[in-house]
Length: 277
Image 1 (tube, rainbow, N blue to C red):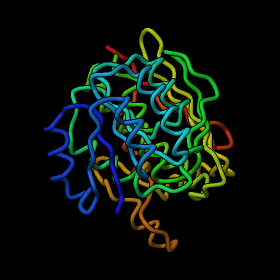
Image 2: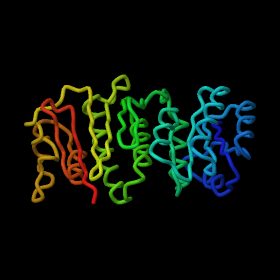
Image 3: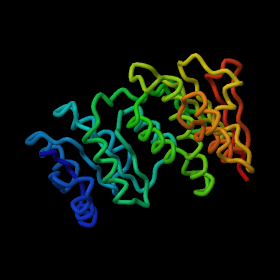
């Protein structure tokens, strides 16, 4: 039976995790604090630890390092009452599985905990090449779980952006990341997508580079990107003629969310720009 260790005196969290269908069949244990958590992890095999939301990210990362000295395969989900972009970067560098910043949705925490329990070969899925509060560059292995983790990290990383704008940004970010992984790398876990996120005074900029051969611009007529408002499914017929499944919705959705989108000549790099009001 999978074991999850929840740190801190938060009965509502324990009840919420136990009631979650995502964690049905899991044993949810509790530790009174960080010292108690160290003793429990040394005594029994724990699969995922969920940190105390009342402790700082810095203390949580130090704890995770200590726990992994006893259980190298331990996965950690960090809960924090607040976290600066630099702390989110530190969590990524420490190979934390996920980081949640208050206010928390227990259902989302439970779902991420389930992903952590099921994930294999995840530890090096996200590598920080350069990490600054306003500029982060990453190399990301191609896998669905890694993509979901990165989208969540990027959402927490940009908590300084208004929620409505951030929600739009994450829609565009996720669609282009998944597009790069699927079409540029074929979801090959041995391949990586390069991702850069920059915040200027007036805009958010995302850059994606996949390892694929790119695409011919003329191929856009076969995707949803070529549709018009008058005929939103125009590409269906063309793709059916070619024996292809419907595609291009991710790019179309991203184009509707951001203010500008640019591809390089080869077609394996894309730049998204979202202006902030």
